[in-house]
Image (cartoon, rainbow, N blue to C red; front, side):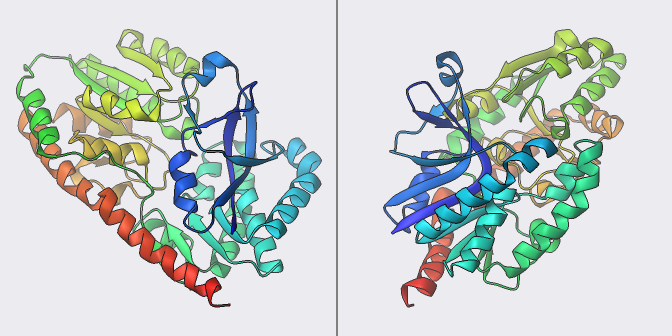
Length: 388
C-alpha cells in the first residue's frame, strides 16, 4: 500500500538531496508505515546549506517527497495555485491511503481529491487557522474568517478525525465522524529520578538567585508571544526581581533583541536558537520555569515536554493550554502585567508543587498509553477500507 501525507509544513533539503525536519521527522514516517510500506510526503521544501543542516534532524528513512510550490503570499498563491492543485490531484490518485493534516491548503485540497477519487483518508487537526491568521497581519485578519469557514466545512466532512486536543479544537471544528483526542507529543521516558532531580534543583535555589525562565518556539513568529515575557521582565526588573530568559527555536531572534534593548532587559535575554529535538530535554532540565506565552495555540508540544521533565510551567489562556495547566498558573494572552504578577508571587513551595503536578499530569502522554490509543484508532480506520 502506498501512503500519502499531505500538509502545508516544510522539510529542508541539502545539496546532496538529503531531507531534514523537526516537526516532520522519522517518527512520523514510521507511524504512517502502519498503513503501507511506501510513505510519501507532499509538502513544501526549502534548500539549506551544510551549516544550517547540522542544526536539524536528518531523515534516516528513505523518504519520498513531492514538493509543492510556496504559497505564503497572495502573489505566490495565485501564481502557483494551478500547479499545486495538479500535483495534489495526481499524488492522491497515485496513492492508496491519504493522511491529511489541517489547517493548511495542501491538506484541505488533498482531502477534496480523496473524496473525489473515493480514497480512504484520515484527517489530523493540529491547530486553529483563525487564531493564527488573525494574530498575524492585516491581510491575515481579512483572510482568517475565510480560512475558518473552509476548515469548518472540510472537518465536517472528515471521518475519521484525530485531534491533538481533548476539547478545544473539537469544539472549534466539530466532526460527526469517528474521532479521537490525542496529542502527537512523543515523550522521553522519565522515571521518579526526573522529579527528584527537579525537586533537588528547586531546593538548592537561594532567595536572591536569578530565576531562569525559558520558551521553546519559533523566534520570529509574533503569535508565539515572546515579547510579553520580555515586557514582564521589564516590569519585574523595576521591582528588583531579575530573570534570565532563554529562548530556543528556529529564527534569528533579531526582533526580540531589538525589543529587549528598548525595554532595558537585553542582558537578561539569551538567544539559543534552534536545537535538535534530541537536546530539547537538556534545555528544559536547565531552566527553572517554562513559559508558553502564545497568542494562539493548539496543544503545544514544548509545554507538554516541559511538564514531563517536572519543570514548573506557566501558560497563556489560549487553545489547549488550559487543558494542561491549573487555572492559577494561566494568564490572559498579551497580559504582561498579569504574567509578571504570577512570577513575582511564586515561592519555592509553589515551584515544588508545580513540579509534582506537572510530572503527574504528563503521565497521560506516556508513549505506551498514547501508542495503544493511536493503534486502536488506526485499526478502526484500516478496517473501513480493508473490508471494501
